[in-house]
Length: 400
View 1 (cartoon, helix red, strand yellow):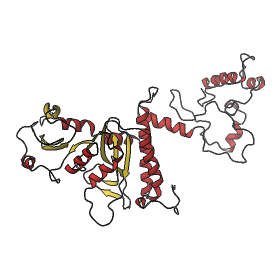
View 2 (cartoon, rainbow, N blue to C red):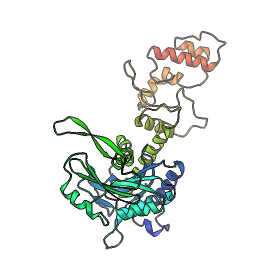
View 3 (tube, rainbow, N blue to C red):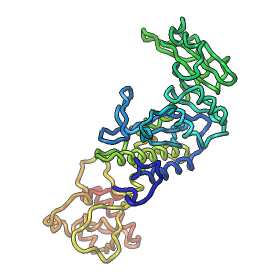
View 4 (cartoon, rainbow, N blue to C red):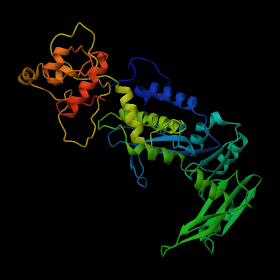
């Protein structure tokens, strides 16, 4: 499976992803063109499971997928549609990367400047400088913050270290639209925000040590963060139910399978906006998509020379197995008959009525059935005969 000519020339930024670069560019442009993100956007990382040998592989021991290829993603916080992504290829050169999180957020939100959307991210990306840069670019932001980041307020560092006395209490530092808040949960939680009012108080439900639940007051930035941070995780959840991923040694194939699953998941998210959509879950959507892609294709080829005439029409163009209440039988199309079986079955019911070939009254009478009305048109007579034979279990294929 190849995606690009090995002798073609590509931009220097895609050296490690050279074999898959055209697919990445095509899908990135298509995702951004099809759906315009809403007000709230979440930025997070996704992982492609991979344990082979590759310079793209990352190791994160604290994550559910510890080894794999990292992908930065920007998703709609309301539905999980990923409109922008970037495959992480590692550091460039031997120098240590500084401000990687800020670079990722700025790169994924570059096309949204001036729209005043709300961007949510975790403490891996956040910093005081990033929040101010996004605010100057016309974007509000909110996220958790590490106390060792540059520019962290010195007045809040002792509170982060020692914590507050009561659960649900908080302390806030404000400088213009920028607010840094320390909220006491089981441990101190630090948030940075440019899209919340520090005087607004919300509530959150927490579980106590004895198993009971209680409601505690919290700053508005924490409530917004908990509500809108799960966009990428929602897409990961939908993509993880059913995936196209086969074991191999090539890392770029794993990237392609991730992109294929991502395209299917985004299509499923968009299908939920269709009022005529009757598919309840991802499984139904994937099954319907597979049937549409397969169509009338049949991989099994007949031996001998190809037929000169037009292909024979069948009662059902979509040939898929189904679960029935009655006793099961072998399907005529799937079962691989031997030459002796073909000779025995030649001229029998299976080879006689499964086509729209002309059936005159003599052929019908030979099987023990007569047409009820000779004035009926031929397809209707053939369908009626097929229903009778199926009822007597002489014909096992799903014809109607």
